[in-house]
Image (cartoon, rainbow, N blue to C red; front, top):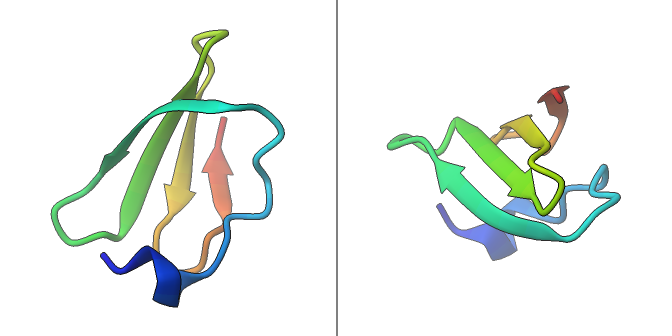
Length: 50
């Protein structure tokens, strides 16, 4: 996935420590230092679940 062409994910309110991207780039999972995991729509940058 080309992050520059996808834009910025607007709902980050914490520092992201880890990120996992599905093979097709359709889903992203992020984790922060408080062990909070967020699931994102990779195509639109929308937060799906936290």
